Image (cartoon, rainbow, N blue to C red; front, side, top):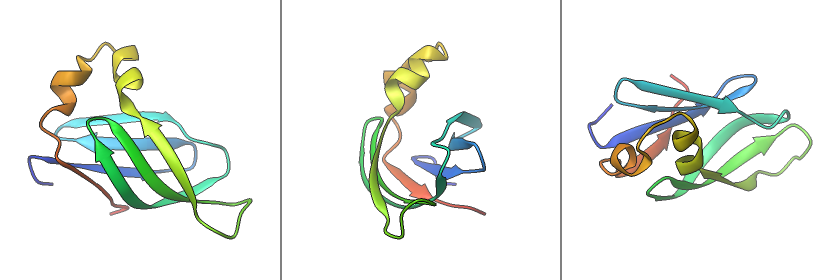
Length: 91
């Protein structure tokens, strides 16, 4: 993982955001199968494509990391500042 790149993925129940040595997990929608594409990254705000079990087509989904980070007592601005890119990876 590059110094300015974060990873987005999910497991059965959680969305997972990895950056540096941090792994942040938060509740995912019950029917989320997987994230398929990051369409936009804007300082903590993600627009992604996601595949859900209840729909044949992918859907656009929105994730705002700032309130999640603040709820975990992070300084969201400082944490998000160096991240230039987010990619999907299930490795």
